View 1 (tube, helix red, strand yellow):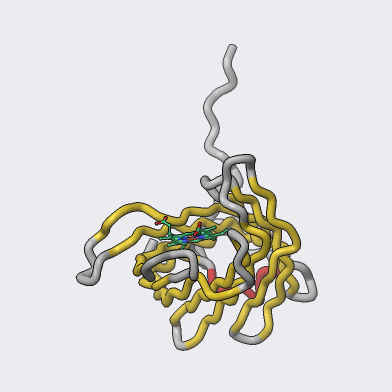
View 2: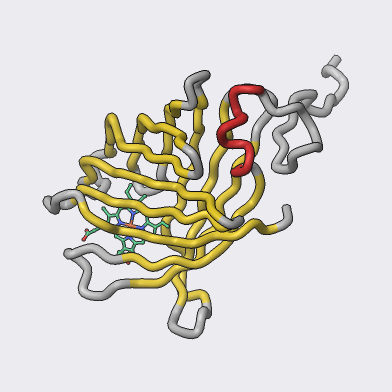
Length: 180
Ligand code: HEM
């Protein structure tokens, strides 16, 4: 006899005040929980042109001291019309009692990053401890990210050491909350 179907008793939530109580260790990152949306631009010396993109990020939790993270981005033209899907990543942000962070991210392009980070005031800084790539992935050797929350706006800046280039700017986006 199959077991009766049961709802998962431990759902994730994107909304503060709904679902499980956030774990007290999440206090320094509570304001991130939810859905963010906005625009950014990017460049890298190996690329002939810079590019513009739109990005959606979600942070949710299930009551334990980590966030579930997902980001999707798509390229846009000068008028804001969607051109094609671009960077996508999913992962976990573990928040330690001293407000340090351990982050694991996986990309559909065959890249897995682990980060060491720290929350301080309105900002989160993180740098890779390791980057692993599958045999046919692009060569990425290190990344740095800064997330800054000010005046209700989340700014995301990413620097990258990849394809033989030294660490330098790749991406910058400004996001605002979007209702789930
Ligand atoms: C918002 C997220 C991102 C967007 C919109 C984005 C966009 C782009 C674009 C448009 C290119 C040019 C190639 C192409 O047209 O696809 C590119 C190249 C590249 N990106 Fe990103 N990217 C993002 C995140 C990342 C991340 C997180 C990494 C590393 C983990 C990364 C690593 C690279 C690499 C290695 C290249 C190739 C450079 C080369 O071969 O010349 N990107 N990116």
